[in-house]
Length: 608
Ligand SMILES: Nc1ncnc2c1ncn2[C@@H]1O[C@H](COP(=O)(O)OP(=O)(O)OP(=O)(O)O)[C@@H](O)[C@H]1O
Image (cartoon, rainbow, N blue to C red; front, side, top):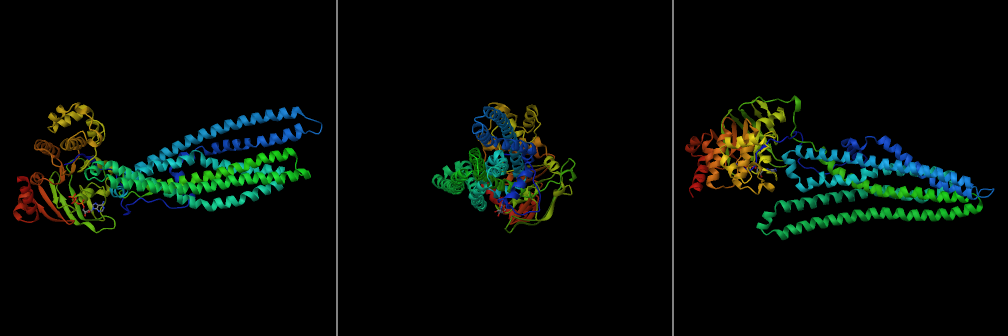
């Protein structure tokens, strides 16, 4: 028996045997559309935001117009300085600037709200999906890498959606508005401006996929760093015990170095785009000044027109430069989106039939496997043609050598995975047709290495029955004959178990698992017996509590202890993925086969 009982987790459906989560493929546009589909908050109220953004953009052209009017119609008016025109223009400009500022405030606050809402939904969706993926998919993806998909990859998206997306639209609007105004002042100068900038735009367009790949590499390296770090923290005790500090340090260094290189590569590429934008802005202003002065001397533009034009060039070049930066953010965001969407869109390979599924009635369960075969992806079958029936209320011990397929059998019985061939039945119903909610109520898996949360004992056992109050929990502990244990704990049920349950002994962790399972009150108990040794007194307490837990329920235990096999109604011997012997303990010992040999070695071990 082991440290935790968990209710069979909700898993999803069989179609795909692929167990890995890579990065989603598809064009930037496709990724954006899919991202917006997953987080509808990002586009909610967008029309109003864009309208306000249009006001904000339109308001920006007031300065060049004001400059032109005050210069040409005010300061250089044919009849001398016209102060009325100057004051009037200044007053109007002040009003428009105030409105523009208010619109800007509203745009930004609306964007932040939409972005935070959308990203929270994305995080939640991705996180739930991580739990819906089969154990197989979860175990093939390194934990840190999976964590980075749900956390830091989502953060990269936030920078873009908080401002970049709408900035791109505002920039585009600003380019159009300034171009129209520039045309009214001087078509020739407008042509000059566009001629300077078109090459940059073409370069940027060609550069985007390169940047996209560079940022995806950065995201992947972030995942690698997190995976290496979390593994080294999780395995700290083993690392110390085997003096692996140097090797672990080297692995982390290598991951950090790869991340550094990827980061520098991406930033250098984006800086090249940014610097070329800056260079071209300066260059354009210089050319406009030269050509504009020549046109002014010829009388083709007024002084006010030229000054206004220079402001407009600034209005034009600013969003073009901004756009290069925003496009970088976009590529970074799309790289993050690719990795998160890959999680969200990975077909969960064990599906809940949901409302249309079967609701199993309460009472001891009959379990049956019919010609079940299972192979892990890309490997030979580890279970072949297993046919087996467990009568309601009976107690079965599954034994076999290490690697024979016992744990795989348990995963199929609790629907952590589905078989490739054959069927697993509970009370005659194919497990695939049983609602998860019903499965969770009726079947409880007590894994070998369960998880204890860094919380009180009460909170940890409440995993089995979330609604149980302290009195119910205390009563359950006493029902299991463990009152002495509870009474001896420093703070009773409020005792903290520590991270991973480290404040408890191995035996006590097993007791927590038993209480959890008892509170869950299942009809079928699937036990993966712990191999860790405990002191004789704890062993007796565990055995006694287990007896009480199993009473009146069907139970299937992977047995590592002789006593469990001896007490079972039936022993099933698994060897190389097949059931090779089955029957009551005494009969099998008498038969002198594989079980008899296993039993003899157990007995010898116990004597020694
Ligand atoms: N996630 C996995 N991916 C690929 N192969 C796996 C996976 N899990 C188990 N296997 C392989 O399947 C075979 C059966 O493993 P299983 O864990 O079911 O054996 P077991 O009898 O429970 O062993 P033990 O008593 O040591 O726990 C082994 O060869 C193992 O290497």
